[in-house]
Image 1 (cartoon, rainbow, N blue to C red):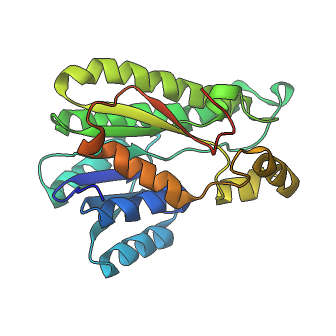
Image 2: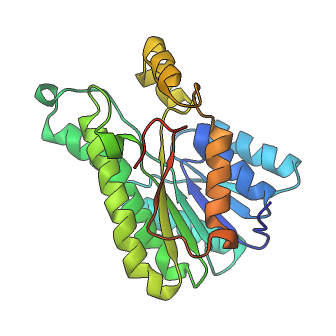
Length: 251
């Protein structure tokens, strides 16, 4: 396993599903983890308790990462607890909000989804980078929807995730000379509450059946990909949008 001992990791949206799995995986590898949440305090504290019980180090921090002040507070809490440097940022926070066709969307809804997904990655990166040095790593969360346009009613979500992919490439160029790597993951059908809420069971079954591996992925598999990506084992990988979809879509 990659050794992340002594490194401070900030994970936005870290209280459930993929975010939780990432927090636990990074802590298992030795990182000190800041578990960010917006509303789910009970879930965030459960993540911290699980990490602590396993011998790791973590703290919960409430912050709305769609707002500049929320990102600044999250960074300052991390620095106050774990020192003057942030080594890893994983921008998981995001969501679909609702499935809406073009005629049902107004600019307020479109802006909300863009701010939630692309805006949060931008604001968190802007807040954290002044405290990141050579060898640091940022992982953004895009989606297969950013590659293929998403399913019915996911136009705003797919557009926002496409923006995350392009933002990732741009930041890789801008921050590369400082020794900071920036990559993104593009998950496909992962068994999470996201799909419990927004995807019908028959659609999930059909997608799984059409996947070369004939199944959905799980949060632990995504988390292990993040752990490898932020480690020195992948120190020459930056600007990549990495598919984690069981072969459903090839970039």
